[in-house]
Image (cartoon, rainbow, N blue to C red; front, side):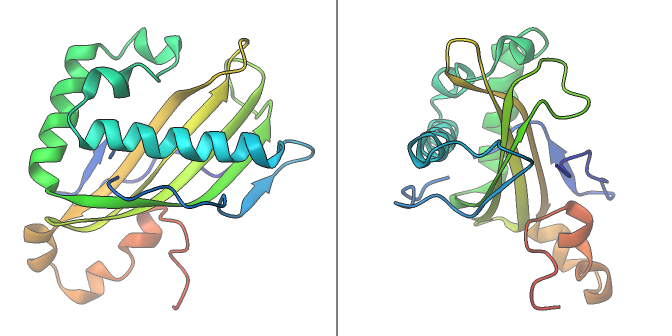
Length: 187
């Protein structure tokens, strides 16, 4: 998987939290894997539905419901108060919008994982009223009880005001620098 830290450019935010408004598509996006990591279609749909449900709860201001899907390892350092504050701040700044999950990447026992098991990255792109660019991913882990929980969330975004102040030559490479899915498409 290539989901490492994203470089942050001045006045461009990288936040630990994210958000969608649209309904989940009926079929999962393209799945990528290492080895035998891609599970059956029902499990893929379950992760996709859980991702959209998480975004809907977060975007809808139901922060306790959104926070509840984090793995215990995340809740050990991310308090409900901190999460609620950051999510509310992002929602107020970004305005209304929607996210679309464009890729699920599955991996079993990835290097550097603190806990063995099945992981899936749900890469998304988004459009929000006050953002020029927004993308990121949710990293899910299948827990011992079979439930998938979020172990990492990253998003990168560029607000409209900052984008208007930038020259086009500086804007063009940002999707790739942010690690947005399909950033090279059409270039």
